[in-house]
Amino acid sequence: LTRASTERPRARGTLCGSLTLVIHSTWGDPHYVGLTAVELLNAGLEPMALEPGMVDASPRDLNDLEGVEDDPRTLDKLLDGVGCTTDDAHMWLAPFVKAPATTSGEAGMLGKTVDFAQRRNLIKIDFNGERREVAGFNMWNYNKNVEATSRGVREFSVFCDERYIATFLCRKAPGHVHFDFKQVVLLDQPPS
Image 1 (cartoon, helix red, strand yellow):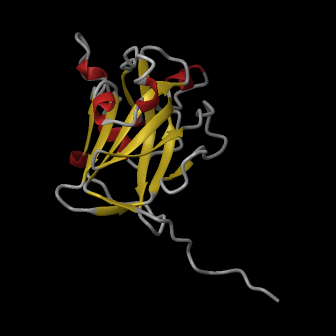
Image 2 (cartoon, one colour):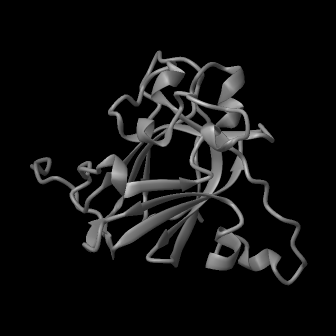
Image 3 (cartoon, rainbow, N blue to C red):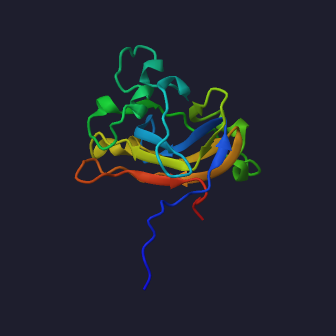
């Protein structure tokens, strides 16, 4: 007879002082990109505590646009603890920075170097001088309604202290909340 293990699985984490998500594409919206929530996971696959001051983005949100003030879809919403929702007051939305045209020699490095990363949408989490072990993320993509899910993140790369880890595909949100649409992204299991 065999028994199921009661031990919590442990993922192989990456030790880093900062983590950067470089957003390459949306699910079709050419102008805006957004997320509903993000949680960083430690090696025990438990959410890590993050303060809003630890997270920055470029562009930060829609309030970076000329003529836009007080739009509620700000960066701090990624950490407000509300993941499974269609209320965009609990979501982050920013202008989408399209990737510059590349030459054939540059195409293989797309998203894998800091130079390319600086010409895209970035979300950076800085651990304020500490080094933390990060195993992955819980991600909830942009989910205002079925039509607006095209604003969600499609493809993104992860950098640990400016060292390329991998490029991942983020599932499109459903546009409703009939089930929790959270996606678990593990850094030690990049897509093939």
